[in-house]
Amino acid sequence: MDIAEIASKLGKEITSLVKRSKLEHLAIRKKGAITYDDFLADKMLMRFVIQEGVPYNVFRLIQDITPLTEENWADLLDLSTKSMHRYKQQSKVFRPIQSEKIIEMAEVTKIGIDFFGDREKFKTWLLIPNYALGNAKPIDLLKDSYGKEMVVAELTRVAHGIFI
Image (cartoon, rainbow, N blue to C red; front, side, top):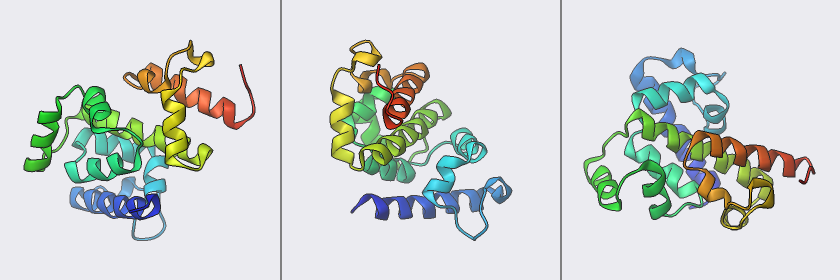
């Protein structure tokens, strides 16, 4: 499944989640459905989903878009891979702190893929030490919100042709 197909499924899942919650007024949309791009552009909607908790099926689709491995996700969410498998088997909803990290990785991935045009090129960039980030690998900075902001800022600088 390609990224566009996954994003379409994500839009449907998010639309369904919002409709079940009776908080449709949070969505910034003119039509009946919320697209994945609408979701990532709407901070209030993202905040709502974080507080409600990201359902496993939404996480799975976000996981399919990102270039992160299961081990990367387990590390970022502070869970064992065994716990992640339990979440899958029981169709659990992630806690808000984990949900926030999931949404942050969706945001970073959107920015990275928009810039590089390709998930594999973005993955390569994440794995190479970056001088502007103190020679740290960008993927290692994604564990906390400050590091995530540094990665996003670097992607933005590079996209605008500003090299440090």
